[in-house]
Each structure stands twice: as C-alpha cells, then as structure tokens.
Amino acid sequence: MIRVQRLVKEFDDARQGVFRAVDDVSFEVRPGEIYGLLGPNGAGKTTCLRILSTVLRPTRGVAEVDGLNVVRDPEGVRCRIGFMSCNTGIYDRMTAREMVEYYGRLYGIPEDRLQHRIEEIFEVLQMTDIRDRLGGKMSTGMKQKVSIARTIVHDPPVIIFDEPTSGLDVLVARAVLQAVSALRDQGKCIIFSTHIMREVEKLCDRIAVIHRGRILAEGTLPELADRYQQPDVEELFFDLIQRHEELIASGAGQRNSQHFV
Image 1: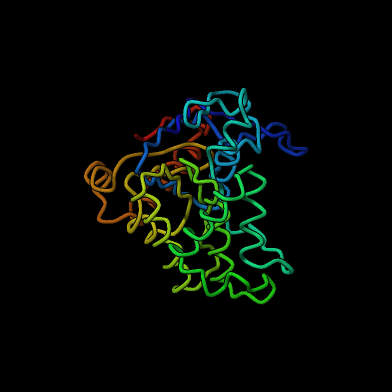
Image 2 (image 1 turned 90 degrees about the vertical axis):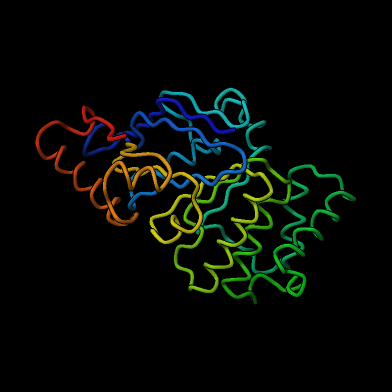
C-alpha cells in the first residue's frame, strides 16, 4: 500500500550548503497495519511524510501510495490519503459539521453520500453532540476529533498521522489513539509518526527508528527487543541514537554510515 525506496530529500542551506533531511530511506507499509515512525524532533519524519502526501517533491528515490507514484500522479495520491498533524487548524466560525462537509466537498463526494458518511463518522468518533458547535468554542479534544473526521471523510485507504497527540492532555491523547486503532481494524494502512514511546508500544505493529534522516532499525517490537537485547522501546531508542551519534563523531560521517537493521 505504501512503498518507499531509497528516498532522498535535500534542501539548500545558506550556512551548510546542501542539507539532507531524508537520507536513503526505504520501507513498506501494508493494509491493516500501523507503522510507527519514531524519532526525535528534526529526525526527518515530517519531511518524509510530506513527500508521501505530495506536499514536497523528493530529490531522488521512489515513493508510492496504493501503487501511484507521488511525483507522476500527485492528484491520484491525494485522493487515496488522509493526512493529520498536531498543527492542523480549525476554523473558529465554522461548526464541526460544516468543516467536515467542506472537506468532503473538496474531495468531490456526492452530496447524498457525503451526508451519510458524516453521520457515520460522527457516530464512530462520538461527535454527535458537537456537530453544531463553532470551532472557536471547542475544547482541544473536540478539535482533534474534527481533525480526524475531516482527514477520513473521503474514506482513504492510507492515513498519515504526524505527531497527532503532541501537546494534548492524557485523556484527549487516549481518545486519539483509540480512533487510530479503530481505523487499523477497518483495514486502513497507517503511518503514525511520534516521539512518544508509550504510543509506539500501545499502537504500532512495526516501527522504524529514524535519526538525522536515516532509518537505524526496523521491525516488530519483539524482533527489535531480541535483536538489540534492550528491555523496552525507550532503551532501544536511546541506544540506537547514541550509537549513530558515536559513529558520526568517529569520522565515518552520516552519509557513509550504515543502517543498523
């Protein structure tokens, strides 16, 4: 459903020259799976996801969503994905229903089907009581539910969550995680980007640890625990990051360093 091969994204930097934000990244995500992209801030997670969502063009490499190339068929890709981040804004003067309707119409969903789809989503996400509430009068949790609803209104097979619980309190974050888990149960192909270890342990079927634009390790949690002899995700994460930093400091250089997978 998602295939990324040797993906590279470079930016021009006035101080450093060329900055490589994504460096030779490869992975695949299957239907009915939550694939965790775990890394510190600035690791390259968001850049990678923006390429998959057609916001950025890759410098080199291949990225495909549901068999469609993100460069050659960006419109087709956008029809097949939903993208949600912690920075998604909610319009203060629109109600929950109006916002979801607006996005549904942008996707060209026929009106009768759109109204049925909205009812279905509002029921699943327990949003019926806020359907007529203005965005400016919503709590943080309500806004996150609206963000999820408009992300999935067109029923995309692929959904990308870029740190969707960042800055949320425990109760709201829990509701978001439950919604993501329910989407997996529907057979959706999901990428879940985060730097919160407990979310990875709760949700993800497989994970990739990314740092300085490179994937350092990939696999299921039991596989990685056995391979690296680490007791939990947090220890695994810090061990991999430390080893990669030591490799860079030794003079090998990031670009010449090897994946640990």
